Amino acid sequence: EGRGAGAMATALGVLVLALASAQAAVRGLPQEQLEAYVQSTFRCRDGSAELPAHRLNDEYCDCADGSDEPGTSACALGQFYCANVGYKPTVLPSSRVDDGICDCCDGSDEAGERGAHGCVDECAQVGAEYRRVAAERAAAFERGLARARE
Image (tube, rainbow, N blue to C red; front, side, top):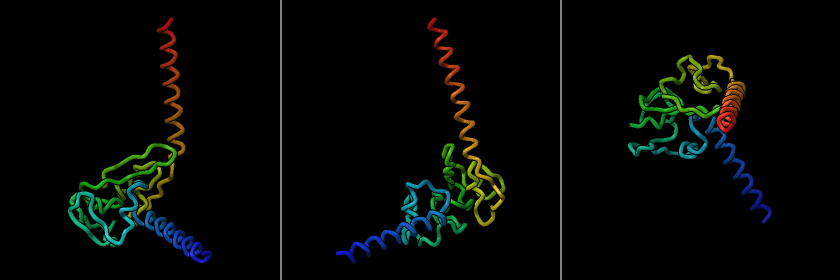
């Protein structure tokens, strides 16, 4: 029984490492979509093709919907997901990936082989400013409501 639990813990650890490695390799995806991208084969979201996992993010658009290239600009219909932790997640057209312009406040759209343009993760600052302005607007709205009630 003790060995079985140890083997299970080891297998679980390997799975966690594999998922973390896959997430790093397959960029441009929200966490909830990652599982479909870490299998040995990948099925396009629109069902147009099934391909080996090594053809994901390979700069060639195999899926009609572009779902095999979330981290490249290879597909006209592709989309890139910016997690933007500290601010708001954003989805960009994949044409903006590795184009030399930091579109995601976390810089993740410029982190590819051709990217590496020194984007700085500014999401904490951008998010703080967004929340400050939203709080000011909410306070002004509340003041207006209070005056209207007088």
